[in-house]
Image 1 (cartoon, one colour):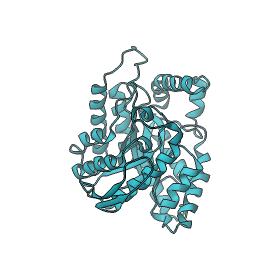
Image 2: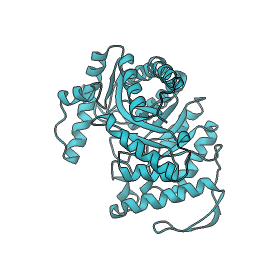
Image 3: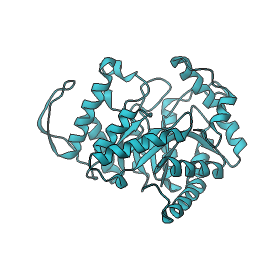
Image 4: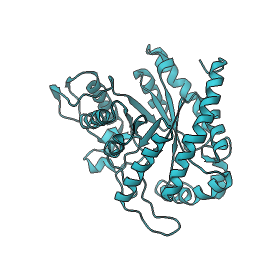
Amino acid sequence: MEIGVSTFVETTPDVRTGEVISHAQRLREVVEEIVLADRVGLDVYGVGEHHRKDFAASSPAVVLAAAASQTTRIRLTSAVTVLSSADPVRVFQDFATLDGISNGRAEIMAGRGSFIESFPLFGYDLKDYDELFDEKLELLLKLRESEKVAWRGGHRPAIDNLGVYPRPVQNPLPVWIGSGGNSESVIRAGLLGLPLVLAIIGGSPLQFAPLVKLYKRAAARAGHDVSKLPVGSHSHGFIAEDSEAAADMFFPSTQQVMNVIGRERGWGHYDRSSYDAARSFEGALYVGDPETVARKIIHLRKNVGITRFMLHVPLGTMPHEDVMRAVELLGTEVAPRVREEISEWEDRGEAEQ
């Protein structure tokens, strides 16, 4: 069972002061958080790609590369790379470079993204949303298969038996499919035999269990070894020594972010009752003391089949020292609890086959 962290490197106004941290400062803070995550034994750190004012990381590979030379074992992934509006050749080159710098610890998490700002920025039409992703994923997978590529599609100039460099340390360079819970996307990942990561950020996490089964059935039908395909999740959360303190610390920025996005998308108002319901044992917020968060992750593993859990922290802008402490607790107290119980459970032969 892998445990890690994901971040969107947000630069929203501080709820307490109204101040907005600079992109430069937040980027430096994230590198410190990745280095700490490596030091406390976490398995993976993911950085999301966004192209708007309230996010600082438009190029996850660059951020991850800044941490690569300061870390030794933690895996470094995008979370996600918005592949529909990216050039797969450049994506492959960037992450192959990261793989070299980190000596084989890079991953690409390919997804459609939940924001659309990158489409007009890079000259793409939203009406081609689905077609772009399918075509570019096909090219990305070809790029990792061989040094020289011959390819032709409908949205990018053809490649006529050209070499793409540098080549990564890992062969193949890992490519995950990120999904918000769409059945078509999980089936695609299964048929391609690619690892799957689910954004579990609302409702009951147990609702994702049928999607994991659908993914595995698709993979088995395509002839892939299901036992070798990891399934990850990404969920908002925060850890402190005391559960109520953790809840109080995480709520203000969470409410701010949820209501800003909610106004953009027509959601209802996010209040404390919504938040408290989401941080209940059956909810999708992983907020509390180490024991509380560990029990929820174990519950997710046993009932949904997740083999990698990524805690998204912070949500919005929080004091850097609080985020660092949450990362430390995740590595030193939550992860050991989860790994020990899951290992014992699997040894008893109770894991899902």
